[in-house]
Length: 126
Figure 1 (cartoon, one colour):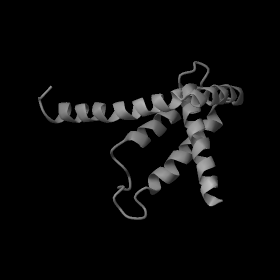
Figure 2: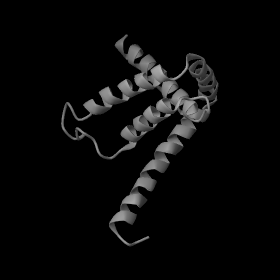
Figure 3: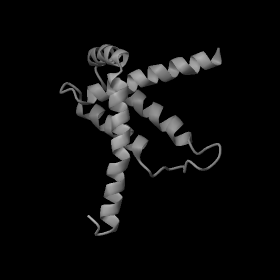
Figure 4: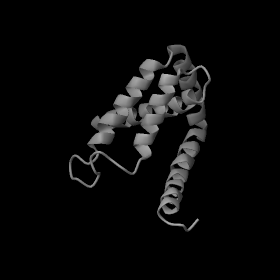
């Protein structure tokens, strides 16, 4: 029973995150909401953590707390009708699998880009 609850929450989170991605690209989104969404993304993909992940027990605490709080703040700043439209579009796109490919592509592109930036700033290789 508890596993089903976690599974449902994970699906809801997937929907909310992709809906925020769609909201970010919409011209009707307030600037404050776009800034919060950008900070959430930066926090999620940043290799620098306030609490290093290798510390047992509390290493992932910043992700468990910061990301849901950031999503909640972003949802407060976005007009309800815009969020409803993006959720509906998200449901359609997740059903066909497009959302998963886009998210996987973003994750896969993030690390090589960050790696190239690190190499470029630390050496004269490129």
